[in-house]
Length: 317
Length: 308
Image 1 (cartoon, rainbow over the protein chains, first blue to last red):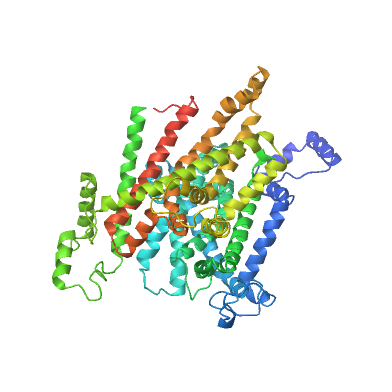
Image 2 (cartoon, chains in turn brown, yellow):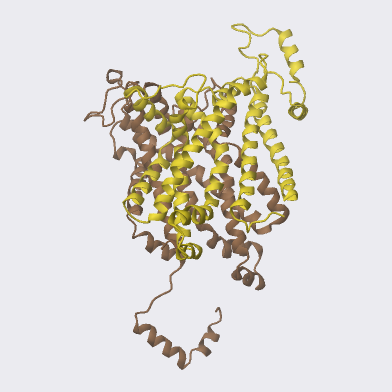
């Protein structure tokens, strides 16, 4: 294929014939898996719904002033626990915060936790999975058992152990420190999932002819892994990553609900949920509005993941 | 079969050692005084601290402490917490409640999830299918504490159908709503897995053969289709029991259930390393044993699978 001369000698009368029949029925360029998936994706209403939600949430995180003129710590105790009204769409919290304004500003921390936790999880997990799947044998056995340790730790419990040991009750960690800790503990506890996905995809790809061909042509291991196998094994991990991003946003909220996650002065949806949970009997809007935002955002990512999976899986068409 | 079982059980050993060591180190690696606040308002006297340090071997290097702990685990006597309460006794008070809660959740998942999945998988596209698809999406996106709080407010406070909190005995009946809350997310996954699996197998040749030879629909569905579609669902349910027990902490908090969750929360705060390590290790063991049980079930469900 790489030699144009070989093609030239081949292009005789037969090729010309072929070309005329091709143009006769409208020339079609063969589409790649990704091109195909993109076309499939654009046909799905779910893709647009989730896309719009994600863009809105991302805008909230990037430029909160578009959505509210009040700062995150706008506070007036006179309004404590007032229900939703025209001036404060989501009502006021017990401490007199405007819940809508605070939620808009809280999107940033929530999204940061989700994005970075997903990135670290997927990067570590995929790397380990490729190594385990490609080298097999002892390396695979060692990495798989090592992954088992973290996969076996129940998620919430593991996060509680890690976060409370680093921040014993009564300590006052800085905003950045607690964000980093939450991100890292989520990543440490969930990388084995993407490792397993990547490992099985790599094991399948390793047997395929194009990998053998690349090896026969003398490609280095690194080239085989990154240029030949990775583009073909990344799809299932990508689907996992989309859904995981949503799940991690829910985890951030859950950890904050338990009082061990992100905490003030950082504002996140989880922090607001933690503030509202004690007043849930008398003024449920304090808990339900931020919780609703979390739910809608998670829903958007899960829907996007579903749509991407359907688009990438030719069997489901 | 025997050799396979032995090999799998031997694989538990490094995972068990790894988990216990990591958790044990984690609890002790971070500075903090385990005797802070143990003696009321005043500082603990020197003699008390040195006595306790000696008794619990707190001055030994971490590795020595860790192996002493392993020795205790092997001998079956876990000893006492710093305040002199037997660790095994505390575990026996809380663990059964969490196990019960997890079992209720698992049963609800199996009943509702599998039934909904089979129904939509067989019928294919239609109103029911869309309804189930939308409701599973919604359930997956609802964090546990939201489902818990909302059901608690609605059923417990507003309509008075259940008690908002569960009594210390935590009977099976009281655990139905908390079990539903705990299992809701997994239930949605079970539904979707069953649905996909059934829909895929519905077009298989053996199903067509079974229908062609005149088998009644019920037999085709329950004997042929269900058994062959069960593997992914069983895998999920098996590994889920462990995470249900670990995840129960949130549900236990919402409904005020006296289970493992509260126990571990208190003990981390008081740096009771032995207790925390034991609970976490127990949960990891549940996870490992369940995944072994699932692998063995494969051979029952699909006779082509043999373990050497």
